[in-house]
Length: 512
Image (cartoon, rainbow, N blue to C red; front, side, top):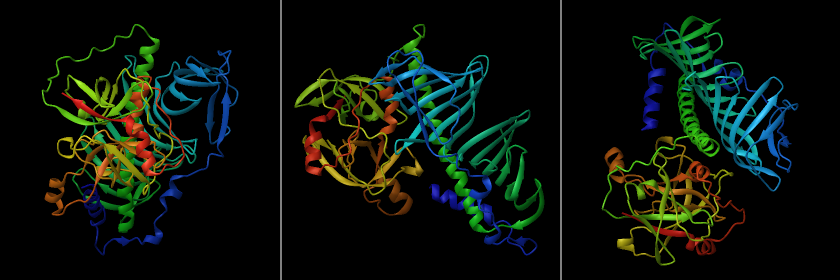
């Protein structure tokens, strides 16, 4: 469906001025957008371990980036320390002379590779989101920029995926005016924006849409652009000094690229916005930990309960009884149990994330957690294994193992939270661990493509198209509930040994 919409949009942008009265601009005359937006190299990666001044024990934390930056500042840390490094949820206070900065975040061995909430003290500007590490270096931020009023109401004005090495940002940012707003969706460098710009009046009605280059500071278009006015007319224009010089016919490759960049900006926006919500949840967890006057919302006891029994799969992620499954397996259930070593054990539902279909359960028994892969990217073509309890009424209660490959790093309609995979799954596999060849969990088996919908849409069967939620989206639940999950290990294991090793850590979940 997404590709169909892209095709329609490309046809709309490119097929509007096929007339001899306009100059046809050839491909060779079109500027390269990566050159024009302003891509820079911010220097080599620079790590700097800093000791908080308020800690007498060794408790270092890593400050890192791609420029030399400021080195004359001091920090304090109110969180825990372990093996000489800052760990867990806490607040860093940075003193930069006349400026103090607060950052609430989650540290692992002194490194920030999770969620953060950062503000300049006595300022109304807040940044929150997630740090992304690649090859153990901080390379990107999924960040929400927001302003906060006197009543502590926040309004986000930029939701971006930022490349820390080049300074290039993808996503959405919004400019407010007295009579409306302008919304930019695409990519921005140090010079220009490239993508789609929409304007809205104070009634939130769209009044104007333009695709192309824009100088955000001066509000002026540059080079070539496509304009759709309030009447729905489509024009291809050449700009000079911010003003339209003449109508032209732009090449289809240019209009197609504009469509793709705008779509990439939208996807980055969705990813950063989701990370922002998790960062706010982490901040709430911090507030509850350090501020005893906070009122904790009571659990809603009025939800309707179902008498139906559903089954799924779960897997232990720690040595003290925490396990993960899909949220829909235990939804609206009053009684949840697992079959552990042949015995039914009552399990409590600790937390649920219905948006990402993840549930955290707990039993009061010592267990062996399967390690989680939360730092390295899983590439397309990677071998995977799945262990679970599909269709127990038909196939029996014995665990079933299936094998396959990662086909894509996105799911339906390009949803970046999911993997698409070829390993077969059935009803009852919901919540099964998806493992790489070292026996670490990279995802949670969640769904398979609806064959009826595919047949209705295309007339053909979709063969072996299944989806798994990436394990990193379970981290907010684990962080918020202080789960000491096991970390991944790099040693490759053959499939037989892998399945044998984890079999006691994968259980049948029964919900009523």
